[in-house]
Each structure stands twice: as structure tokens, then as C-alpha cells.
Amino acid sequence: MKKVFIVVLISCFGCLSEKNIDPGTPDTFIKYYNGGFDDVAHDIKATSDGGFILLATTQITNELGESRFKIKLIKTDKFGSMLWQKVYPAYDPDPETSNPIDSASFRGRSVVVLKDGAGLESGYVVVGDSIQKEAAPESHLRIMVTDLDGNTTLSRNFKPNFAVQGKAVAVNQTGNFVVLGEAVNTQATTNMFLAELDQNLNVIWTRTYGAGTSNLANRLYVDAQSSLFWSGTVTKNNRSDIRFVKTPHNSENTEFDLPFGTPQFNETGSDICKYGFGFAVIGTTDASGDEDILFKRLTEDGTELSTMTFGFPGQAENGFSISQSRDGGLILLGTVDTNLEIGRGGKDYFLIKINAFGDTEWTQIFGSKSDDIGANVLANSDGSYVIYGTTVWGGLRTLSLIKTDAKGNIE
Image (tube, rainbow, N blue to C red; front, side, top):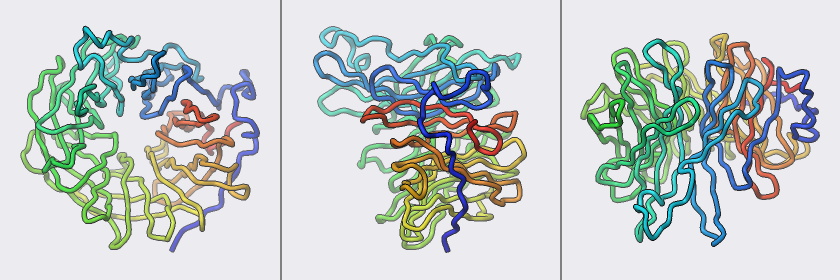
């Protein structure tokens, strides 16, 4: 049975604009970032100065009408004010003289804050993919390391014997990078790709796993034994299930590759986070006849502990991001198709707070009159929350960063 929760509407969203935010009360804010082209939000991480590093993909069109995708990084302070932004590559090379790899389109998927041996932040690592401008385009996994000012210090494109998209990156106990990717061509017999790279981006090992079609979340976890955990969706025989995978370090076999689903219905996994001694996954299910946000709690060995759904009759909701909150609970971010009775019309953000015992504490719906599509939610150390997403204004996709208080309110 569908669980329907009372949602508090935020009336102060009458006009979603920075000019309505009082600069004297920066505890909550709404910020937008756009350089005149379509921008799509992908990932966000908190930085030690209280600010944030934002990862996006921007679509740039030149005077000839040719479009190319580029990776974009934005660094903000704790109030969401931009400190710098950079796109990669910074310019379009001459197609007549450049290497084809240099003229590829690039997309970012995941960003991680790097730390040095003393535990101080030293830069950022981004993983994504590049699409080669060739007669038969194919994706290469792309990894890029920058300093704290966003200057590229290392970068590399590589792929196994099939086209691959980079999805997530983590740093293991030795300081090496572990990257997760997914196959994007139907000829591949495997659909998941792992590789370990040293700090100079030299490949130490690569492995492939899986069957069917996979769509992976942009998060990868490494435990103290260097085992790896990730999640996503697996599709077989025209039906989708949440996928939860664990593999030992540099292993030819997974320890488990488990599907979680309901027969005859589609359930997808979009994000994963640590929760107590196990994990929590957010996604979407169509078991009620329309789409609802789906939440599952899993043990570290892959046992399902609980399942919850969130939605409204006749409305479509999708789950996108999940993070552990300061009090040991969880904050969930989704999107709901709204009308005049629920939300402001179009797609709005749907924020859900769950306590450490799995009980729902509160929910919020808010957004602009345009479509607002969530990418990530972060729980801050002061109990507040930050939402990173994409807002569509007049057909132009714009990056949005919203900070709420501990109850999901914007003042």
C-alpha cells in the first residue's frame, strides 16, 4: 500500500530568485549559476572551509552552431557565493590540427575532495567520460585531477575492450584511485568496470563484472579491507531491479551481486550511502501504478532490512539522492510532478527526513514555477541541508544550490 505523507509547502518560494534572499540572514539561501548555456548538475561535495565544490556538464554551442559538452567545476563559499568556475577543456582546439581526443565532448559524473598526508585538502578528482568525435563515436572513461584552484594537474582517457562511461571514484587506503564505470554498448558481455590507478593515473588493474544492462549510481565505497561497494539498476528481460554489489580488492569475482525488486514491477536504484552498519539506497518504484520514491535499508552483507515508499495518488515521484544526517538518520531528495494542490506545478524538489530508527520525521516540497530536478543532497554539520540540482528557466537549464534549515525550511 502506498504511504502518503503530509507535505509542508514553502510559501516564500513565490519567486525563486536570489534578490528575495536577505543578505543579512545567510543561514538559508537560494543560488543560481549559469554561463548562458545549458548546464546539468551531477555532484556536490562539502569542503573544509564550509563551502562546496559543484560538478556539472555544460553544453556549449559555437558560432557555427556546433555543440560540445564540457566538464564544469564551481567552487563556492559557505553562503553559496561563487569563488571560481572553470570548464574543461578551457577552449576548443582547431579540429584540423588537434588530436581527436582533444576535441571530444566531456561529461562529469562524480567529484571527490582530495587530502594530503596531513589530512589537508589538496584538490579534486573528477571522473566521467569523453565521447570521441569520430565516424562511430564511443565513450572513454575520463579521470581528471585538479588543484584547489581548479587547475588540471593530471588527466587521462582510457577504456577496456568496450565503450565505457565513468560513474564514480573513490580513494583507497593507499591513496590510489578506484574508478567505477558502466558499459554503454550492447555488444559487451559485461556491464560493470572497475580499475585501480596510482596517484599518477597509471593503471594497476582492471576488472569487469555483471550481465544484463546496468545503470550505476555515482558513488563508490571502500572499506578498511579495501572491499568495494556500489549500487544502481540492473535490467533483464524488460524488468528493472535495484542492484547492490560488493567485490574484494582486485578480485575476478564479486562477493555478491544482488538484485532487489518486486516481481512484475520496475524498481531502480539512483544513489547509495552508509547507514549505521550497513547501507541505504534510494530509487523509484512503479509498484503502486504510478512512480513513487523508494527507500531500502541493507546490511553490509546484502540482507534487506526494510523498504519504504513515498508518494501521492496520481502523482509521479522519483528518488535521486540520499545522505546520512548529523543525528544518525537520513535525508532523501527526490522530484515530484506537482499541480496547484501539491507544489507549484512542474517538477518540484521533494525532501524527506528519516530518523535513526527508520521513522519519517518530516517532508517538504518546494520549487519554482519551472521544472526543478534534484541531483544531490548533503547534510551539513550544523544540522542544515544543501540541495544541488537543475532548474529549467525558459528552456535553459541552470544550476541551483539551496540551503535549508534543519527542518527543510528556507527563510
